[in-house]
Image (cartoon, rainbow, N blue to C red):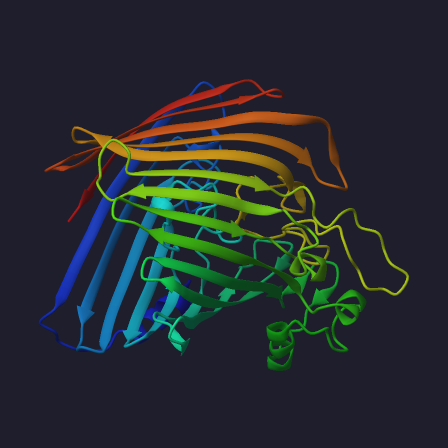
Length: 445
């Protein structure tokens, strides 16, 4: 963390501006449950702040933004978090600097990705990086506006690099990230978007295989998905270096005078078979509806999520070209999987083993509903998920788990802050029901 603090301090120029903005907030929440654990939606997709055992937290945040001139803007932000559960110590929640130059945004530090779809989505709007885990430290370069290829077609992209720390099976592993987005204008009010997101875990020191390749030449192999060199394991030399995963996202946006509708499908892949859609229809399928006039219903969302195909069971082919058995968020080299600080980074219905090695559940069917709105001055959020968990291909459950995760939250804004209340319940055919109630408060300054 010290090196990130040094980077942030060095990124702040000594400037004066007439468009400065200081801001901050304090928030807290406490809850009680009839069980030693909490219902699913009280801790899932909460940026890793809460876990199954958490009963309270307090969070303080502060930031500073300045518009240097018409082309340059700087923002720095920090947040300190204290809770209970598995991690009782004070910790950094976010610490970052954002510098914008015209169409280019550079982020350095640890920051949470923005909330999408009114915070109603079961995957936080992204099946690979959902907001279920704490903010990863790193750097990201982003093009805010697209470049036109034709009048009706534009593209933009992102490039990122992150670090996973040393409290995992492969210590100090790194993550390469890139995004390419194409936006097609079908009419003034209709857009069709195709996105490709690619992630790769690489480098670090394995308890079994030792130090893994992480030189610049290895980074270039990671970038293009090439096989490993002489320093890589036999598996990485035969296949791609590192642990690759990603998704395609297809979105159709319709803007009408009274409402907006978004139809979307996001895939999930970890090898060639997934990239070639052999795991169809795995992924998230969703519809999001938002009326232009706010009222009792401000947004509605339905998602169907499935991760059961995985391109079929793994069968080693005679030519060594591995197909099938995608085994989402799992990897034989990076045995902590697609996790950070013990939490799944992406789809929260995928559950890691408690010992930090391997995945317990990555084959599920999910029906998810989300609803938000207001009555009088009270704002509400409702989430309900029906889940069928099958376990994994290698270790299927003897009996399929059927569960319902539900959450209802209320916000009451006043002149002295926002008062919060939440009610949540989990019902499962394999465990006792879990009920919880919580109260919180947030003030901005």
